[in-house]
Image (cartoon, rainbow, N blue to C red; front, top):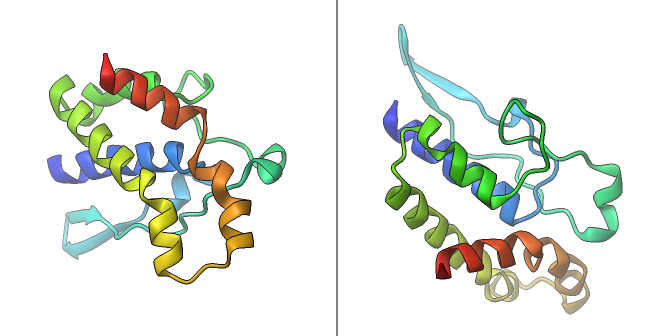
Length: 137
């Protein structure tokens, strides 16, 4: 259960930092391994949303308060996922590192220059800047 909570928080961060605005509770499934023993399913339906398409896509709130999602709010919510501040910052650092490599990954997957240009705003966004400043503090 603890590892599932950590992974769920990691996915929450990834969704925020990769502009996966179409993230909602039905995108997080669970698998029953045996009677009464459930675990988080593999991640699925991850869709970075470029800025040009965001006005039509609602953001999933991080907490029940329905505030605008942010990295700071995710960090504040980390204890609810069983994470200490140092663990949360380590996960944030890992996710930021992966997101910052998106262009190399896109080229390795042979995406066209036009597609890479279209999706740049999904991965190079104010949330990444917020995360970087929080990591530097």
